[in-house]
Image (tube, rainbow, N blue to C red):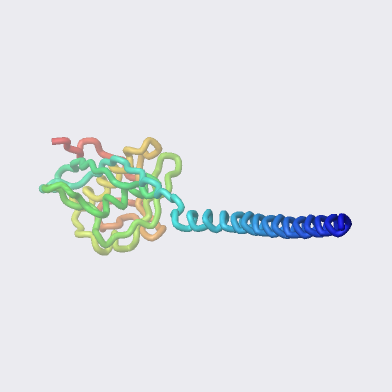
Amino acid sequence: MRGNVMRGNRYFMLTALAVLLVFVIGCGLTGSKDKKDVGQDEPRVEEQENSETPPVSPQPTEEQVEITLYFSDDQAMFLKPEKRTVEKGGKPLADLLIEQLIEGPRTEGLHRTIPEEAKLISVEVVDGVAFVNFSREMQTKHWGGSTGERMTSQSVAHTLAQLPEVEKVQFLIEGQKEEAIWGHGYTGEPITPEKEIVSED
């Protein structure tokens, strides 16, 4: 009788251990699965956050410079300065000055000195001389006259002579020197700015 009881107890204990073992293994599998899922979810959350946040790409601020241009007065007797602030746009300052001169004045009472159809091809400074190369329209669209020629040549000369490296200006038409671009004054040699032609009044 006692043997049967002992065998029953032993059978009961083995059964209980088996059930406990199955439970522990089941929990272990479930826990490892949960950890695996959590590990997989984290990068997805991070990727989602990154996709919703646009990259920061600030635009560079354009450099602005104050320049002085010289335009003709009403009587075509004097040149008068006009100051303006413009964006440099990565251009050499000599190019910027001539391009702004071509655009014409913004001040009432001042008049353009370069035909609006003219295009600047290049500016190159060598040994104090600025070689300013214009398209053919600088010649063909010009209004002419000795006074008009002087206003044109001197406005360019004075505008560029502000630069410390420029002392004189040599005009070129499509890369070539011409003795009299506008038919009167001699333009085969560099032109020096004339101080008496500028009026600050």
